[in-house]
Image 1 (cartoon, helix red, strand yellow):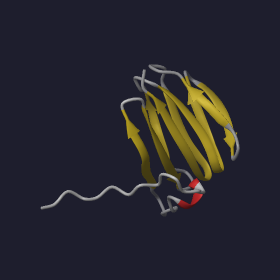
Image 2 (image 1 turned 135 degrees about the horizontal axis):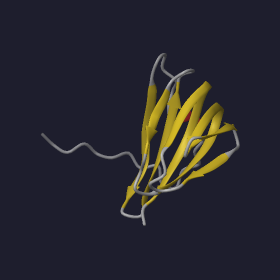
Image 3 (image 1 turned 180 degrees about the vertical axis):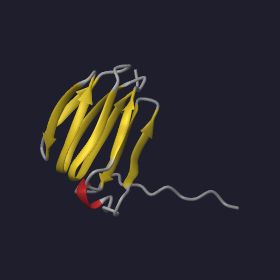
Image 4 (image 1 turned 45 degrees about the vertical axis):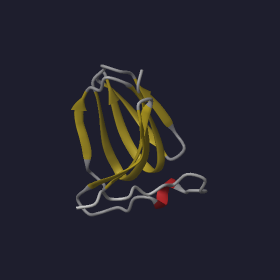
Length: 111
């Protein structure tokens, strides 16, 4: 079976809110970039959905592009809304919970 061709978004003006659609009771994601230096992924969370506490080996920048969420880092909660960003340090436990329908761009910085 031939390998699927990857879609290129290079040299396009993109509204990241349009790249993933909300789905009831779900979290939807779409990876935009994957390199040895890092990744960029867009997520859409339905209201009430979330990612349970976990750690990652790399720093991550969470940028809210729609809605509102609670981000917990090392047990401290931060309310974030469209236009906000927060840095989640490597190896520190963190979680994300959608207060409303919520979209984010997550940039993982591989060191």
